[in-house]
Length: 106
Image 1 (cartoon, one colour):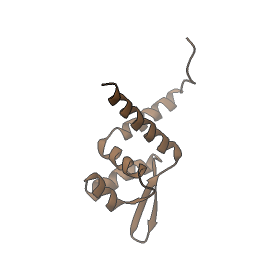
Image 2 (cartoon, rainbow, N blue to C red):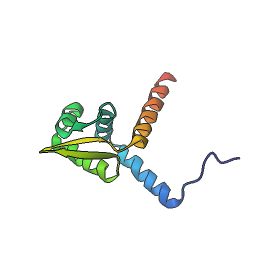
Image 3 (tube, one colour):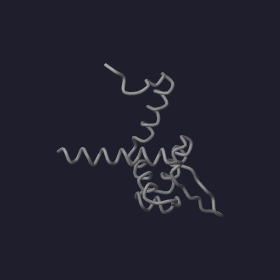
Image 4 (tube, one colour):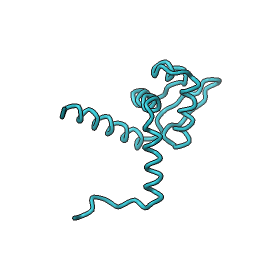
């Protein structure tokens, strides 16, 4: 059998599993979906979009920022968030496409 791609080493596999655990929480996924459909969004607007408190959203964004999934920009007292880069956007888009495709097979 020919390998499809390079096998990640143990550290890379651990890091990848940690990333998927981080993304595996519904509120964080809703936050990321909100950011996927907008260039930049304030914490307050994200909270309204995902129907969660600003505190819960801020805590989730802190984790996502630490993992370099999102980045922020301060404008006065308002903090705006966006996806960190195109890799994150691609990961989310491919995952959502996969989910939609699974629904087609049912």
